[in-house]
Image (cartoon, rainbow, N blue to C red; front, side, top):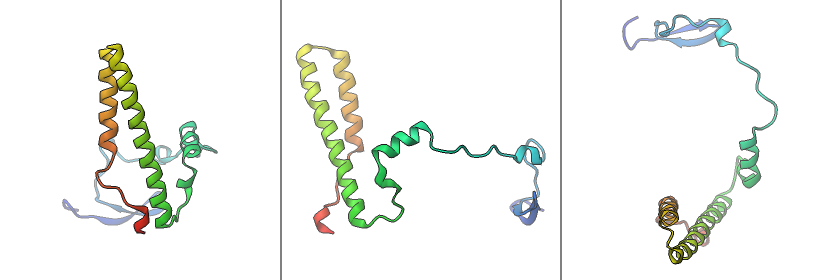
Length: 124
C-alpha cells in the first residue's frame, strides 16, 4: 500500500482499518492488548466531584436547567472573587507583599475565567 492508502483488515478477530504499516515497536501481540478489568466504583476524585455537582449526571438537561446551573456557577465565581478582594484589602493594611501578590494573581486568574457576557435566564 502506498502512503495515505488504507485497507479493511481483521485484527484480533475484529475488523479494523490498516495502513499496512507496523507500529514503531513491531506488531502488537494479544498479550499486549490484554487490559486489566475496570475497577468497580468511582475514584476518590470522581466521588468528590460528583458530590459537588450531582446534577451533571443528567444526560438530557433542559435548556432552562443548563442556564440555571450556569448562573449558579457564575454566582459562585463572583462570590469567590468578592471574598478574595475583601481579603486583599485586609492584607494591604498588614503590608504583607508576598500574600498580596498571591491574592492579586488568584483574583486575576478567576477574573479570566469569568465570561464577558452571561446568558440571562429570564430571556428563555
